[in-house]
Length: 249
Figure (cartoon, rainbow, N blue to C red):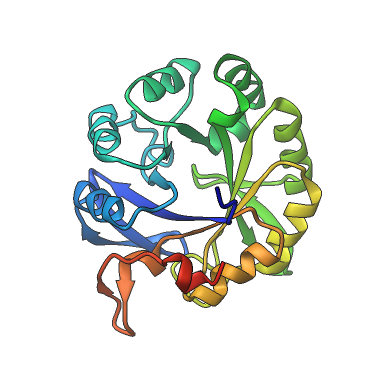
């Protein structure tokens, strides 16, 4: 079996609809998440990430019914993030078909949850996602999904998460989100070297070359949103996914 790098579509949901953001704001409706899953099934994607962009920000409960419907349609491994606060949340998500859970704000606010989660469900089930923005002075700052700036070292936080047993890290960069002009390769490279667990780069992909570049920078997988739901300069909605020949693996 080939151990080529994973290419992972990221689907954002808001009030049950599929949306796409730019720099984490201005969500634009792009379709129905169930239909998107069906199309990605046909394209035989490696795995898929679904993030509820309101669940943590607005302190909403997880839409378990929607996630169950998405999981039942998925032929590929499904990761879910958004509004996960407790071990019971994680257990319920796994029971309805989610393979990996992604914790962001709760990992910042309650690091002990990661340790308990990995102890109960295994490291391979727990992914820590972090949102990073650049300050006016060019410094990288952790940005909580709940909308608060965190005065903290991303390096310390991620090393803490690795020590707690997290199996993987998803890096999302705010400035690159939806721009489709390339990943922040410098940051993703630094993070990949700082931890020994796999890193997924996300934010900015606009071409096959971008996907290859983020892997070359040290990421174990390349994730993207806009690239897989838009086509053309006017960003018409059309779901796509690269083949192995497109990627030249």
